[in-house]
Image (cartoon, rainbow, N blue to C red):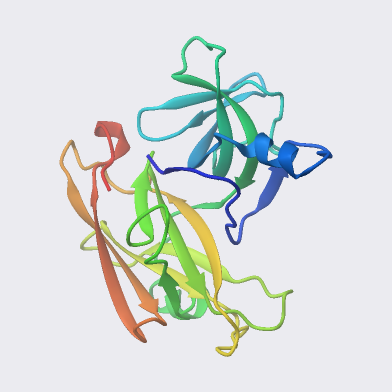
Length: 244
């Protein structure tokens, strides 16, 4: 469970942000608004009636009691700030009041393009956040998703969108993946690296059939100026809890 009790936290490279408060009269009111709040990386799960619930971890469900519904409601990873609500909602572990929601870039695993991988997915460097508040090595698996807390080097052209993908490149080992970055030439090493969060759904991986396997992620790191590999314990969601 990736949660943090505190006031506001700055997170980078998110798709959209909604904060559920209007004009507060003073600093005391603002502080009270955020008091006892919890921050978490979650999965937004749509229901059939244009409502949704929140999957906090592999087993805990939250139901939002306020009326906010994200635009283009779909299953997506998100950063949320919430307070526990005393109301009970049947079928869910906890009712909550959402104070903030920032949707994360959420993607499927990308296909192997063979000789075109480098030109399409890029070979630009990035770095995992070793000081991440969410995971000690900047990457974790939860609710069938792998999430990266990372840094990339950016350039001066804000109109150039960087391209991030998790690619299957080893046909002999489906649990060996590459975290790729294509900056499209928009990099200036003199600029301070930018932080970001991105999640990839792991449902395209074969079932582990109840076993825990090693999921290997290779990436090109500007921290070491070389290729690095991180390994995580993985059990497919169809057979039970996923492990970090």
